[in-house]
Image 1 (tube, rainbow, N blue to C red):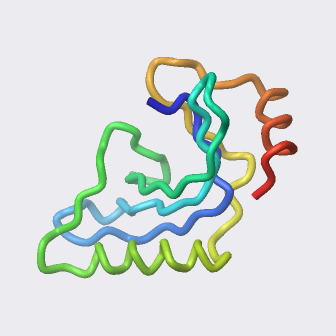
Image 2: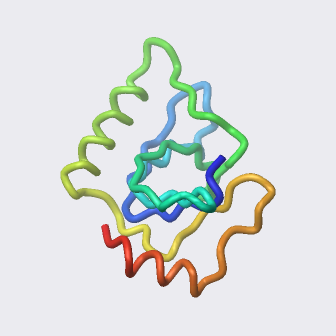
Length: 113
């Protein structure tokens, strides 16, 4: 399980019915730190509810809708350098508290986007 995820860039894609109107898919590129392992660049899809990442809800795409295609398009846009700047945001996963700020700053200097 990842210890901490640091988004570098992201795109929010509005989710369609039956998701609530204030829910979206956050498609992002960032650095994932798994404790003792070296940090790695990854792509991630998370659900966002009222502007807050919901770490307990896995993405789901309604059958017959366009959500999945829109998420794939957002992923391609990130691969081409698009998206909003996510630096300074971090998401702790699991029951671990995350990393101290000085470790985060060091990791970002050592592993630039």
